[in-house]
Amino acid sequence: MVDSEPEWLQSEIDVTAPYGYTWLEEDQIACLGGPLSRVGQYMYNKCDQQMSPEFFTQSLIDTQAAKMRGNTPTMPGAVELVRELQSHGVRQRLFQQVQEISLTRF
Image (cartoon, rainbow, N blue to C red; front, side):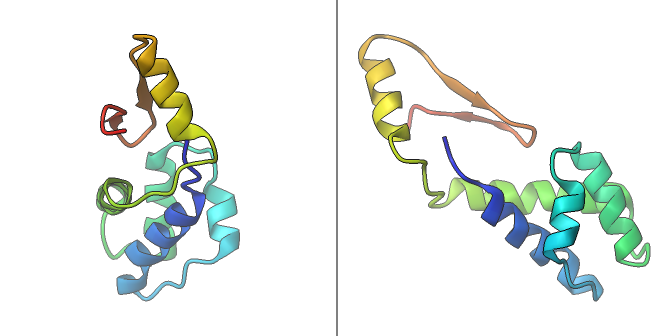
């Protein structure tokens, strides 16, 4: 429904920058598809263990959730698909690792 990878990359940059680490595309690739707890551990190691792995995990979740509440661009046809499903009485929800997002705002 949305291409959130560019926003994830920016969130990872935003979370690690205050701890003196420059998050690179290779870091993003190393963390793709893994559980967020593994990403938090990875950030913890890269940021010289300045905060706990749990801190980094929660900071990433909070940062990305704020971005997703903003103006996240949808994939072509996504809004139309949701509206079509709604017009037929089909209820939908989008589940992702960070949080459940209701699609009723469309």
